[in-house]
Amino acid sequence: MVASDFQYECLMQNLANELLALDAELTKRVARGFVESTEIIAEHFRGCGFAPARASSTAAALVAALEGARTIARLERTPAIFEALAEVSVQRLAGPEG
Image (tube, rainbow, N blue to C red):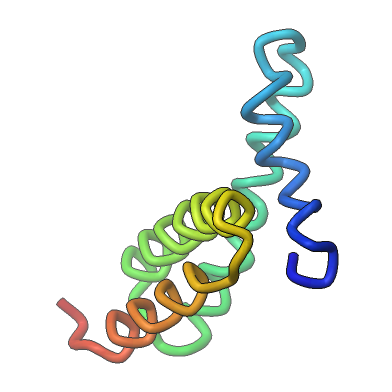
């Protein structure tokens, strides 16, 4: 985002926010893209030893946080929100199984 001077975001996020009401098939495809992205991350967490439920919920929360962070970074024109998200994520991921 910094390299593009905050001109580019997530295409799936943009489609989800702007066009989905116009096309049911597009809605399904964008939703599937988020599901697949989240599953890739959850698979990584499972490989790191996370219990399946924790891997899935952590991946879903991370994807949601990144989508919001992209919007904030673009509005503020700074990657600071990603740094804050990374700090919180590291603390959470390093914490007890809970």
